[in-house]
Image 1 (cartoon, one colour):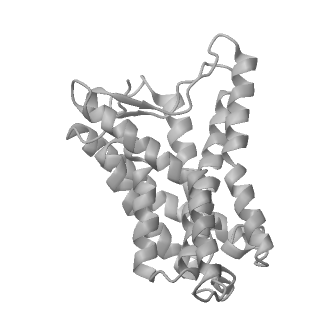
Image 2 (tube, one colour):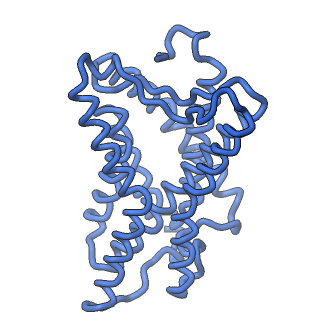
Length: 267
């Protein structure tokens, strides 16, 4: 492990009220963020399974328009959604600061090593991104995945910037909450390393279940890799960068290529 990984090590908590408080805190943070998303995805997936036709005949739309005929109002809604989605990250930063852990620095989300975060993130994105696309295409062809529509925004001047902001928001929210924060709290409350890895990976897969079985399995595998890398590096910074690169390519690439290439499924 890198020398700076010690920042991500948990504080010492004994049995009793301290651990009980941390467990309750963790459940509340998840209920306000990705835990709620996981339940929503499970309900959505159940609906997709009971819908007439196969999963491949259905679509899961991301980054959709809120006011297609009113671009300025639509922009306001997009920015509002991105900003409010990051509130749980601000809450986690507050909780870690109160703990005396130095805020998000405790999980390696800071500006101390931008070059390390960017280069490692780019390498991870290159390794995972292409594989993920192939898995999605294969899962869809096999009927295990819905058609993913990464964006359905009107062709306006703010479309690409909003897609980039959305990708960054997704990456910050997921990696800070489901890797950095969750692993820290599970370590502090006595979970084994394998148990924490499984919990983080299954949670990641579950809140992507709206995409179908393929989305669940692919994202769970990604979750395992990201937990192992976090344990090695002690930083979520590279994982945030990797996730952001992957989503930017997916969102912007779809916006530029949908309907123009035969291999990219569209709704």
